Image 1 (cartoon, rainbow, N blue to C red):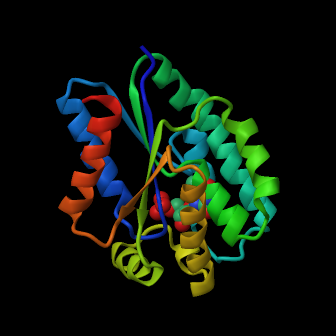
Image 2 (tube, protein in one colour):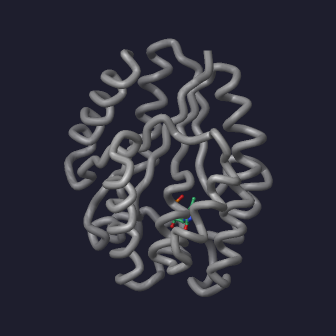
Length: 207
Ligand code: TMP
């Protein structure tokens, strides 16, 4: 049987990676085979593109170049890793997927969903997440947490208005597609956030 595809989304510092790792452990404890991965990245090609994308000056790339590189990394990821794993019955947990491109490049980056959306549909085909957890928090709280952790500094350096648009963008996508995108209040404690995720997983997938 085909595996399930779960993505985690949100602004900076929302705790996506930690919750994704916890979910992976939970699914493994149920006897499922799980692949944990991230975007941009997840393949050798994607990780090479990631180095170009997440480091350096915030204005290092023209927004269209950024869109094309994010999407190129995704095409490699879907074709080499995600889709083959799902076909083998593995469950795939991905830290960010195409909603990040819709929000960061399409909405906050100003390229427009009319440009970004068709390109994402072309890049992923039928490989759409079964469920997406949006870890939502105030952007200033998230940026503070992200700064402490270090990491994808190029986007963190963008101005406050950009991060507000990222948050609003994600919430707008969730309002459009509430069946797939589950909004979780990431200002809650780690355990409270996890309990909500676990509850949704049990209900949707009868775990
Ligand atoms: P992260 O791994 O810490 O989430 O960092 C990845 C950064 O790249 C984050 O700031 C969001 C950004 N990003 C985009 O702008 N568009 C995308 O499509 C993806 C996957 C990430």
